[in-house]
Image: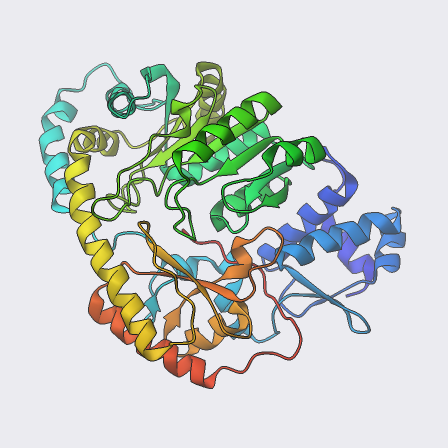
Length: 474
């Protein structure tokens, strides 16, 4: 692509707030994610684009480096810079961010192991709707707009925190359209373009995509955020994001003492700590759900959701935070969508006191499927490293050789969708990993293992390191 042609597509890329390289990377990212710059498209050389944009070469180089780390572009000595992925549409349909819908919507003949959520609502959900119909019928003098969430649900969520030993008032709760909207609202409220945010490597890819949408620059620490104090001193982050219980994707659980120390470190360093508790209710039988990090200090911001423990179609999430933060988020939500679905919120409020029953029942079948998948992988793919977990919904698997991105493409051709590890690592590492969920039936898991073995037999690792843009999944 000629520099002048790309400049025209970039438009008023520099009109926002933040460093120029962040703004340039953000606009290029949008063009790639929206398909304006297709896979395989050649980008202008650093100096040529810098000259066309009237900026320093360092601005272009740094922007390109950010996108390369994310896996959205590939830079090779002698062959220039290209949008990641082959020009064939089949590659784009397997791994890149704008096409993540293929990870959520089933495709004929494909076993979907990339997206993790219960595949059917429990009968208790329908029963909750039935029980709340009379309350809905009695509603009067209420137009149904509740940007902070319906009072009944906010009270029920606060009560559940109380039961877990965390004193909580309803005005500390903001109800959201799932945990993803909670992340989005927090990112918009707390991040300015160019801000650093501290994340685990690997971590939930939907969080990384959300932070990048706000032109934040993720900086990584190992799972559990060890070394937080030094990282805060080095990067001055807008916040730190952690998944301490059944971490997505590794399934790790942070012990009590490191939890306390993490919170104390964050408070002492003056950095906002966001805890993602969406997987926290997914322990196997005998595994207790640890208290939220907010049990150690009330300034910790906590995200929760019913999507994983009940059903993904029940779009109910929330934020627990200090009252001023909740008020700030509510103002943003009012602009975004005025409020959530009231019947769903009433049903969720009815379900919450019964959640332990669903959690315990789900723990049994999740562990059974976890054990079954590991046994099938050990039988068909003994060279794969798939450690057991104590809860959650996914296995974090290290391949013996090659990279997860190119293998995911081979696996899809054999009828199995898996998630490449590079998209879960803000540094673009974890190339040798894939994430696989184990929530489908045991029959499907057996068939998936059989197909994965066939894909592995056919797989040929690329000679050079090739990455494609990270896929967003849940």
